[in-house]
Length: 449
Image (cartoon, rainbow, N blue to C red):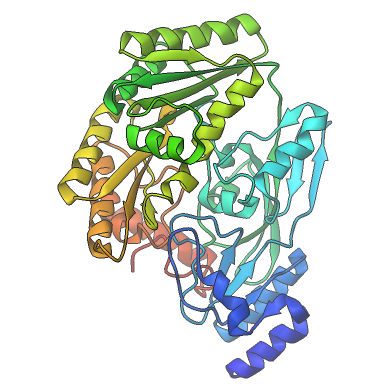
């Protein structure tokens, strides 16, 4: 059967939800960083049964399937290769909250923020909160095992998954819990390379009764990182602990004009809990540690001021887009004890390469997002990617990993041979062959050829 017959079969199965015209398909070549090939087709399934039918079609014709959520990924995980069918899950949006069991059942097209919004009337919330939580979808969060500012205290996406529903390479649907062999855990973070997730049961938590927020302005990133390392060693476990380097702060101030201290590195901290006294004591410990390392500390007075401070952190991405037309958003995680040295080495690398590098991220759990800003008309993209590779090597030298939450995708696939030994890579490839014997699911991602 030729491609014409494949297109006709897709049209018959999915009608107008099978996008076949070139202009319809172009937007699905992109994620937030990379651009891929124009897909053979884009299909927008609405039910798990339709996903099964699509997998069976793809298997019969030997066509690769690339799962996609909102396209907000930062590693090329949802970027299609030549001849692929993109499976866009944005129409699978069923969400049911069960307050009695403190769980929610969600399909992969549900946006992350919507889970907490639906749970809030019952006094519950869903902790994973990536910066793109208003647009990113659960399917993408599951694929990358996404985190967010709350991950230091509350953990990442995989910590809140009780059950996963997925379609395998034969087109069969399965529901996996995590009571014995944790096969669901194997799918979480696999970037759609082992099967297509069609739903998940999520664990919800009670909303904390009290919150307190502070902002600490440091003369540089190194004392800030040292303060974080010391505070955590003393037992601080705040809900959020985020940082922005001076270049990042200046960019956000240019963008929002909210009175942030220019030329300073900022640490934003939020503590929460049900005991008001304990919440205040934890914030005081962080305040004292920061002050000893030269920071000027300001506590937020009320919810409105706290929200304004967190708005500054959420504005980082659009603010950086005003400095250069393009950027590579790196994502590494390192031991907290290595933070001061790591941020210094990354800053030194940016100067050595002559490229603008800004740093921000979830510093409480050592998850840093160094961003390389560049203009392709004036600066070499080859040199940008060379710098990205060197930043990855900094993480590995200090006992860290290539990705804290953005995934490997295409962007870091070439780095995997330095990050893992040959036996581990062989084990990963064996798992891929076992679950995807026909090579249907997101081929060319994560594992180097």
